[in-house]
Image: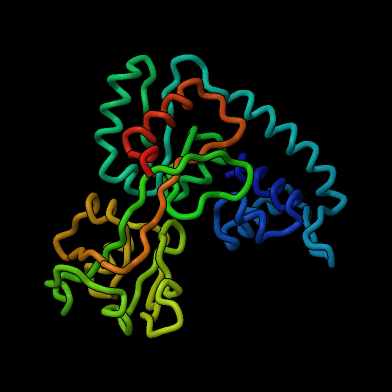
Length: 285
C-alpha cells in the first residue's frame, strides 16, 4: 500500500502543531496510531521527514520540501472530492449511530429531503475517515476535536454496565459505580468512553485488557474475561446472548456531538444538522 491522504494529513498536522500529542488530539486519533502513520510515510518516501528538537517536532530539510508537495496534493484531493450534485451525504460513526434517535432521524430525513440520500458509514476509525474526506460528518461521543472542526451538540447518553451473563451482578436492576470497584475492567482504547479514572480517587476496577473496537470488546465480556462500561446505544444495538447490560445510576452521562470539517461543502449538510438537532431534542437541552 502506498502513500494515502491520511499520511499527508498526519504529517501536516505534526508540522503545524509541532507536537505529536497535539497533532493526535487534532486528528482525534491515538498518539501511537499517529506515530505509526508517520513512520509508514517516512518508509514510503525513503527519508526522515520529522525530528524532535527543544522546540518540539520540526520538519527536516527533506520534510520542508515534502511539506509543499503534501499541501498541494491535499488541496487537490479536497477540491476533487467536493460533493457533486446528487452524491449521498455520508455520516460516519464508530458504533451506535444516533442511538435511539437513529430510526426517527432517518425517517425524518427521507421525508423532508427526498432528493438528498443519506448513508451511515460505520468505521472504527470514523474520525480518520472524516479527516480524509471520505465522510461529510461524524458522530462523536465525548469531547469533540478541539480545532479544525465545527460541531453541534445533540443528545446525552447514560452509561450501562456490561457483564458476563453468569456474573454475580447480572441480575441487578441497577448498579452504582462502587458496585464495580475491584472488578476486572475491559476498555476500548480507540472508540470507548470509559476508563478507570471515572471512579476518582476511591476504589476502582483494575484494567485487565484493552481492545480497539466494540465487537471485540463485547466478545471478551461474553467469554468472561472482564466487565465493561458502555453507553445506551451499545446496550440497545449490540445485544449478545452471553452479555447482560445493567444501568449505572450514578455514572456521568456522555454528550453526543455531530462534527464536520470547517471546509465541508456538501450542500445537504446544514439541513441534516438542523434535522439531527430537532429529532434528538438538542434545542430543548
